[in-house]
Length: 270
Image (tube, rainbow, N blue to C red; front, side):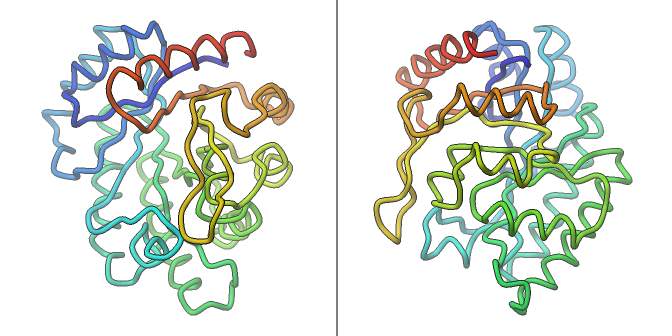
């Protein structure tokens, strides 16, 4: 396994990639929520920056336009491809992201699909599967894997969706903290259900929710409830040998300190 860090295209292309180099990490995931940045010029600049600093971009995390509320009340009606009123524009954003990733030579596209209905008889479910099959097919045309970011659904619900889509270029970007913070699963146990699909990992930590409306709290890696020694051991048993990409969803100097501590913590485990 190798370590990496999440960076954002909106930081500035060379600034973002140089930050990875400054952390002395070999890989990164690039996140972008603004589809208008997916241009040929930016793709060329990103390729050149990655080559200059010797950084491997393992995944492109593609966000989408429209409202997004990260909780249990507004979340199901605002996030991902589940809400009907946002599906088309967000599908187009994902296609633009896939085309951009092809230009920079990245084969893993990641996004939050939203709160996939746990009941497969829910009227929203069949339409969602149809839309997902379309974007997975689009990624296949671009020689890519479409990767679900975990968290907003149980592992069993995610497994069922993958089975119902029925294509061979589907993966999972496993965020163990999300599984806890959304109250959906213990991430170590989740590997028994979805481990064979893991193509990326967010190294993040957090706690279970303490109420029914808000997510659990994100924590510095090693201070939350993810059992990283056991989690990494089980990832290896599943055959995963890709990147552990550090994600700390705060900003400023504290984020830098927490990323450096996470790097030191993980280096001892891998």
